[in-house]
Image 1 (tube, rainbow, N blue to C red):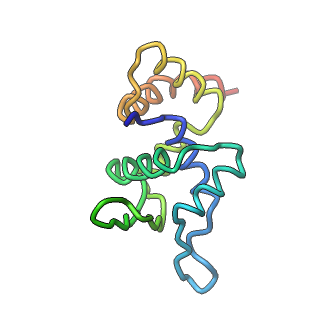
Image 2 (cartoon, helix red, strand yellow; image 1 turned 90 degrees about the horizontal axis):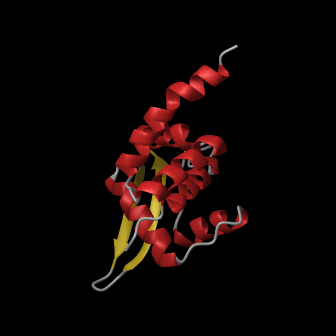
Image 3 (tube, helix red, strand yellow; image 1 turned 60 degrees about the horizontal axis):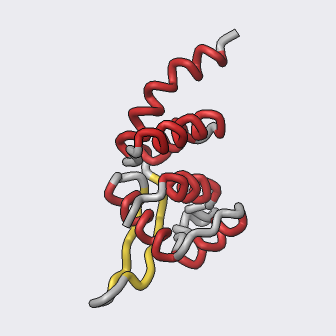
Length: 135
């Protein structure tokens, strides 16, 4: 299965808006139906298989804390408890739409779409973005 880099970004942006702790400091997990709803509310519709695959890759990249609930033959659901520090840092580098569009264009042009490549491209673009923000 191909890792959809737009799905990676969209999931992290949606998760960032979710209150993972309530006022009693109890976890407010995000499961597959919750994430589908969050994505849909932002006009981002992905197949369940793509969402679940992306969540598993975000776990491997250490961008989210998630428990994946499996049966013998399938993934039944997952429970996301938070975005990690690394996940927040990654999201901060790809959040601005202008930066994201440049990253996507480079990925499409080169055919390189791994999370590591996206991070490398974001690191290259960061100095120009910062220079433009200075008075």
